[in-house]
Length: 280
Image (cartoon, rainbow, N blue to C red; front, side):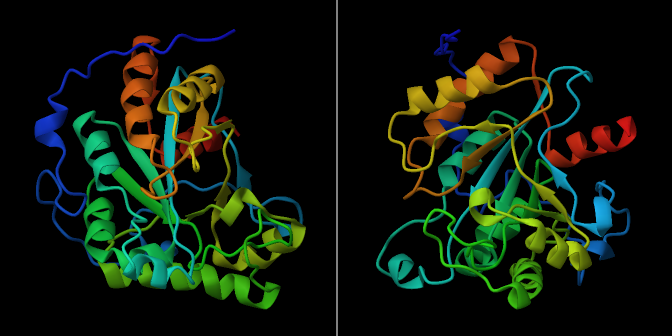
């Protein structure tokens, strides 16, 4: 059944709130950056390892704990896109982050280490804002399997180092507590990748709702796809990249008021994982 997208004006004054991604709405006290995701004083919730100690994979939260939904945003930049950024291509999306702040929507940003290297002030501002949490999307955004949407691949002997390098990049940018969650580039993984990353101690995070915002220009279509797919406990995958997902910010401004009208509450991935762990 097609859900009509309501063009509801947000209650807050978006125009006044749309400030640069690198400038949080209020200062937040900086905490010492951990040397690894396990160094956080009170560890965020994670899932227990899978069979044979494989990295656990999380796709959605419980369907019975009320109407919660997690919007997640991949901040993609591959290791070889530096020249494109130098030529003026924008892999960040400050207006999207500002809109999420203005609408008071908690969110999880899956960031590549290369993105943090390119936009350290923005990474630091997002990472120090309690409304958001930063999770790992690899350093290079190279695929962890073969044949993954044409992405270059990371060899098995380099997978662990690639993930750890991203955490190092977050620390260098000033992100205080990156989460022990990992999203595979392209969402592509196999048993070998899950086995290799088990030593890192992360929970792999997938999704159950594809927004279709990558390279999309029709924000109405993106919003419709999200609204038609969301269920209690859903994880929605979107992107925080101006050049590759130009319709996302406008789609969010349609999605958020509609889901709130339906009774949904926006949460970070960590809350859904914590609820799942409690159910187990």
